[in-house]
Image (cartoon, rainbow, N blue to C red; front, side):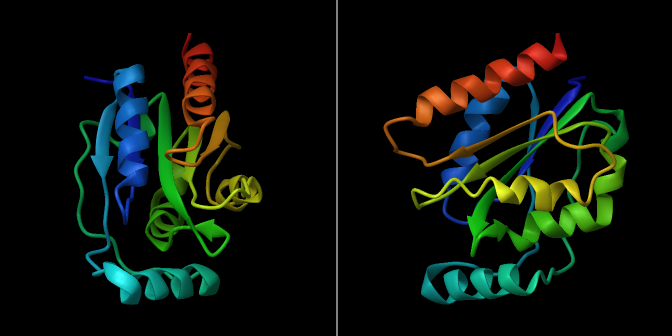
Length: 160
């Protein structure tokens, strides 16, 4: 059984790609979550942004992990940036189950040049202990591999 969990939400596939790469490098369990809401196209984009700005959430669809959340050495949370905040789907997970996670790290994916590092502090409000590592990635950007690999090294250092 693996002792690191990579859990994420991805609307467009960019967060999925980044989390798959991180989970492979860390030999971690990988779980995608959703709230069941159709977020495709322009309508889904607008809905997602509005929910993020309002900080509203919907109930999550059931998901399964190999262990209880509190039994993982580390939970890596992956989220796209929506309107300068984490996605409402990851916010829902944090609101409902954040205190079950002993140690966390964050992976953000974004489309703009802005790094949105203030989101780390927003997410820390829902967990028992502050993050041990965090990264803000722009999939397809020149520095993507550099920042992703640095995050992986930081997490591996914590695990060792």
